Image (cartoon, rainbow, N blue to C red):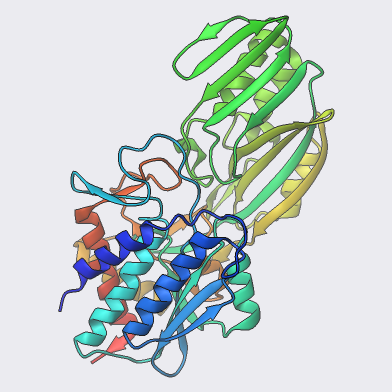
Length: 429
């Protein structure tokens, strides 16, 4: 029995729950929407014979089988879905596309993995180990869910997270979200932009004491009133691990200020408006890839300008080294790492990597190779875990952007890849 249609129905249902973190409720510290999602996946798993545990609204796990523990780790929370979408951000099928916040990151992939397991069980396959699906409720805003899980529950021996890219990701660079306090230019009266460090700023405003050149464009305006310049800028969001794919609104404001208000702003522009980190002296590269730097949040506080950076650094570069270089930059008052993930690596010759890669290549008819990325997936929570999908190399990436979508063809192919992968790594007949 092919269960793709049922997986699609379940995906549309879970997309309908707004699971952006909100005020705590009785069922979850991350809000009512997260609680609804966690209860939904728990009920789905129970209905198919899985043993379940509701982890105080932090997580849900569902397992079947006996023996060593193989984990499939994902999350049901999402980033916000601001902006004008072409379809309902809480789920809509339109023109051959499945739209919705979480259809790729990470509700859709986790539902597909779970239903692939349901299908294999119905076809008479049996797990040769203990298969456990772990659904977190706080991946996008702090990982408190998976931290609580690891404190209270059994840690899988191995497994994967469907929260990255295909073919298979065996190496993830280090992540550090760093608050940098700069000396604020005296004429900068206000600056606001960004909601999450790991999202490229798509909307920013500023007020500068002085008269700059007036501008009125589609994505930028500067208006002079009573001796002050009021600036608005729009950009395009992207995931913090790929800032080059976005259009940072903060860069536009600093670029304008540098041309109209002098050296202090020119220095800030050089430091901040560079996704390689070269402007701040932290650019570097090794076998895991090159450092990326996203200015994700900007605001003023007294005489200070606060910029929160999302830095994805190479595996051989220590976070302390990056902090030290930032402190040495002109105009920097203080540097504080607010959140971080250490780098993660699994040898590409390992059975897990080879098995998943063979499953992917057999279904897609391609010759994919293991990848190294700057993204942070739940694979890092395991000593021997990797990220596996859901993004195909040919897909347009709309994760963390408006109009997050998957074509129906790619969504079905994703389901088929997970079906084959679980058949090869977890099940036997």
